Image 1 (cartoon, rainbow, N blue to C red):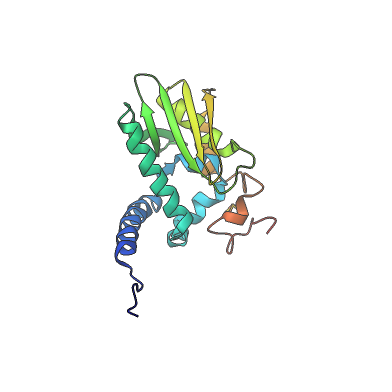
Image 2 (tube, protein in one colour; image 1 turned 90 degrees about the vertical axis):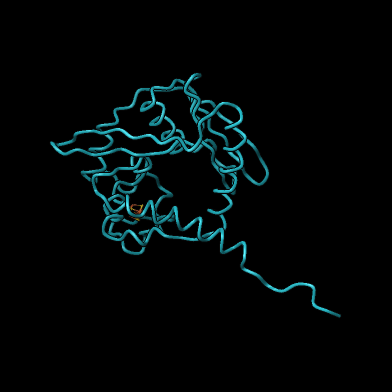
Length: 207
Ligand code: SF4
């Protein structure tokens, strides 16, 4: 009997090159200490500092991340047809201790007219949803864009969950200062377990 299949990497190599293109674009920005990402404001502050010293340690090619990206693209293209701008870039300048920093991020979907910001999250588990750092991240975006309503949508293997988040005022400049001064490490008790830098970090706890 003729063999009907053999292994192939044709589509995989397309996925890989698209994924890595984005990774390397972000890697260049992540080497620049004057650029702070929105995600830096809701995470362990030491990650920002280690990232400048060891940027390549942040590169991973994991199926869970690819799956997350594909889910994002799919839902974003649906929302685009419903009046949302997707992968909406957010950029603001802040002066801290006499030096200028650029805070950068990208919201998954934004409807400017209605003042609604949507963040899409994929997860293996449905425990502790909505997660505190996701709510916090969305709050940062609501503050920067001066939008009133946020929506967090979770897509997991066995549940689809959605939450409204109403804007509460956040002092973004003091969060940036906290990152620069490296004051909170880690920020969340689970954080070191999933951290790119846990093998070289002097502050690692728990694992
Ligand atoms: S290992 Fe923990 S303390 Fe160290 S950078 Fe990572 S999250 Fe922060």
